Amino acid sequence: MNDLIIKKISIFFIALLLIPFTVQATSLGAIKKNDHAGVKPGETAVFTILFWSDADTVTLKLNKMKVPENWDVVIRPDNLILNNSKPENPPYSEAEYFNSPEGAIKTTPVKVYVIVPRSEKPGTYELVVSANAGNADNGISVLQERVFKFMVNVESVESGGINRLLDLGHESIDKLTGMVVTVTEKGNYVLVFIASMFLILISWFIKR
Image (cartoon, rainbow, N blue to C red; front, side, top):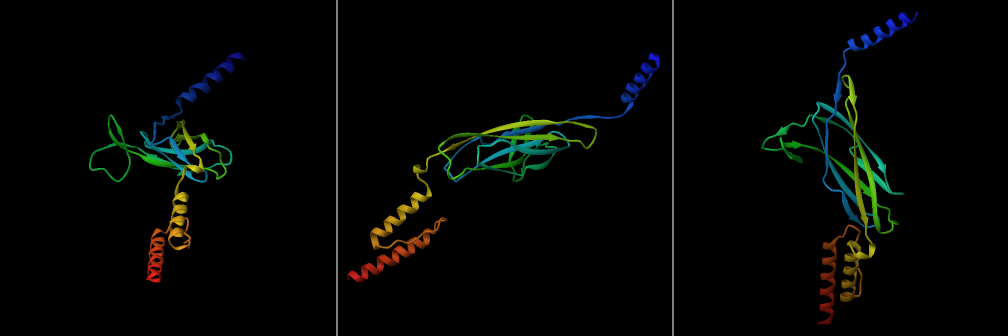
């Protein structure tokens, strides 16, 4: 009885060895263009990761691993397919390249948009994004994971910015004419200039 069991086990393992399959190693290349950003509450920080692959076809999935509370993180694209990135020679196309020892390798950029809440306190915050790559088209795929850390420095609102520039514009017009021209958030500076010149001319004619 024991001999029969041993024979069956032996036949099972021999059959496994005879089954043709391949194990594919996924070679994923990646580099961060930037990993630090300084923004104010309510603003958006943008990071860029460049990817390439030495394999024929690689599927890539990006995920948010660590995000500060109440923050929004958008990854575009978060699912993509990477083809074999072979070194290229000039002339180059309109793309971003990684200078490897073998030559210039064309990369695929992924943008990470980090939206900071308007109520966030000043300080330095960390967020983590992961990238999982694999290929299961033929045989068994070896999954690779890369982890990317980014630092966001939230600055104080008092440090200035476009709102301060708009406020200064209001004060300047008010001193000249006694009137305030409302500027939209996008900042229509041409309209402000024309309105202020028009009002200055009217004041000049009145004085004459």
